[in-house]
Image (cartoon, rainbow, N blue to C red):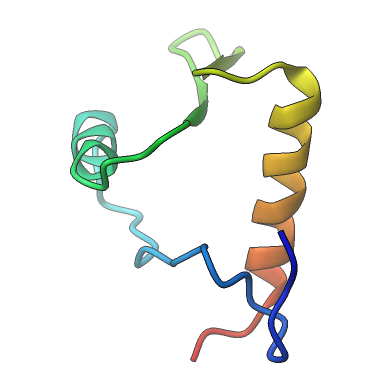
Length: 77
């Protein structure tokens, strides 16, 4: 996927950051987006990293994480 002139990815759109969503609210919000693939990263009650994905191997998950890192570095419009 290539970046457009402003550095944004044309097929990536942002959701407003929320520090008040519960896990259920965040997942419910994601379900309403009709996503083709998903990568879920969280912390369980014991403080351990939990990762789940659909239709992707670790290489594709890393690519998606790198895209997310780029997205966080781009100023919002």
